[in-house]
Length: 88
Image (cartoon, rainbow, N blue to C red; front, top):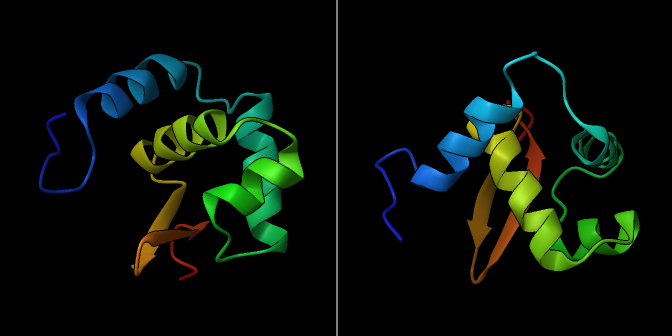
């Protein structure tokens, strides 16, 4: 996988570009944003558990939201802690 300097891979960029053509977030993206409003600094596992989705699904949508500049993460050891953009 090729990662750019800003940390985005080409798949995240393509997915974000495709998904954001109408400017709206989809259902899972909205659920993730709401979850991070309530609990900033959540791990993928915590988000997946709350939304009752697979970890890979949560990860995919978090990276799409990151490409849309809605969320970001900070690395703490092996764990990424996700928050809304600008609230870290």
